[in-house]
Image (cartoon, rainbow over all chains, first blue to last red):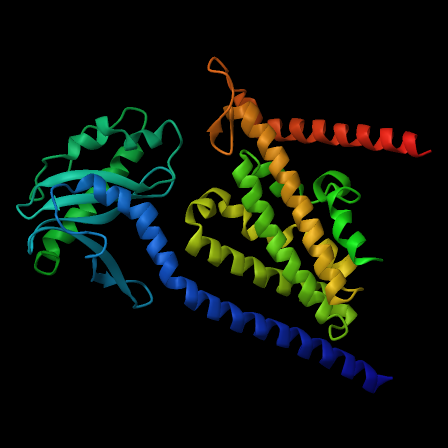
Length: 191
Length: 201
């Protein structure tokens, strides 16, 4: 009796472990296969429209010419990477688009920012946000985002907030400031 | 216990959301348009077919005491596969269905079929069962999606079909509208069943 019970328990443990291991192996394989396409899809559907909005007058493909730079280290010592989308005329990069993040009312707001080589803000586009629909989400309207056009990267980024959506407006400003900060700090690598 | 019967029972006899009234969470949540219904239905069908197949193949190998845990691991693996593949190749659909894809894991239909059918029957019958139930589920979501999309936004599969002065019932796109549409469909199905029963006897 006792022996049979131990065998039953062992069998349960072994079977469940085998199933879990097999599942883990298959999933890691699938993850490896889909990793590239998933990254591509996020760039295509989330970043590309914003990049196209903030950059104009280029004759290259900013998405295909994107590069990655390391802008810092996270808590676990891993590199924090930032995607840079260059706008070129011929071989000269005259402007870049890059994404900054800022804390809004409902979480982080992602903002794509276009910056010219001369240090002028070209335009911004919201890539991701979780702000209240109809209130904080109004930061996506052009009447708000157009205010950023022509600001200098040398000065503090400040525009008129939307009344009733102060936190969201500040979040966008913080995101733009972060992107501008990256441009100022890593100028050599970016241009 | 014929193959044909195992396949076809999912379309009427035990049509999941209406007859078994199982899997209501995705049924009500994602059917705001016909295409969402199809996407959710096909994702569920995929998981159902493969979980049924593997549960059936492993049924003699899995000890009864840990069967539910094993079924869930198998189901969850296929759900993650669906999620990754959808994200990689059907990104827009993935964005709409979002949170409801991982929730397929806890869809009662799938665990229900694993427990009630696949763990007691051979792989071929289980495949037929999974395919039938899955397609039945897909069609149900499609019909529900069509009704809600037609009344809620005046389109079917994104094509505008109502007259030009049509004022959409946005209520139908909200959760209460889902319950109303489901209730009406259930009533209709019961009506048809009653008619059939009366004719038959």
